[in-house]
Amino acid sequence: MNADEFSLRLSRISTMWTLHRAAFQDGVSARHIDLLQRYRGPAYRYLLACVRSADVAEDLAQDFALKFLRGDFGKADPGRGRFRDYLRTSLSRLATDHFRKQRKEAGELPVEPVDPRPFEAADHDYDDQWRSEVLDRAWAKLEQAAPIEYAALKLRVEEADLTSGEMADQLKQKLGKEISPDAVRKALERGRRRFADSLLSEVEATMEETTDESLERELTDLGLIRYCKSALAARRDSRPKE
Image (cartoon, rainbow, N blue to C red):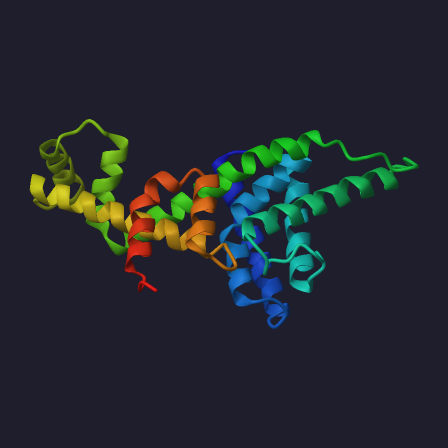
């Protein structure tokens, strides 16, 4: 599947989920519906990895939204723990039910256990996809809030060996304005802080109740802790001492 087809399917999923939301306005918290919309990319990719059919994955994504809004997933409660785990558990159940229904309709009695291999592959990639989504959102927030800091930090990531002077020359061409090497260094410092804060807020939004310890574990599990150590320490230090 190419990028254009993937974007088209995500757009259709988003449209249908928005329509479903209007029909169940009072059923589920707005926060959880927002998270569901924001992370439709990893959700669709997970289903696609399980069922290996773009059409089936899209249909299951629509089915998932309806079941989610109706509260059909029982103990897979988005109000407990991490939304990331809730989403994976619920999608896995949906894909499992799909395969069992297929086999039952084909006349396989008794229904054999579902082959775990596609699910293992999907689980393996799921956290990577989720991490990419979190990083993309943090970059987007930085670009919107501070374009110069975004441009400087992006350039540093893409070309780590450039000196501040060389970065100033490239940023002058990209931004269409003069920027000194000293201003580049300051933009990088501010950009790193803003980026880390954006990552913290994005990850925190996917957890029901966060402590410093649980947030640090989630960042570690996602391989994002290296970007956020200073921000986490600053958050701890800013709290009143008991």
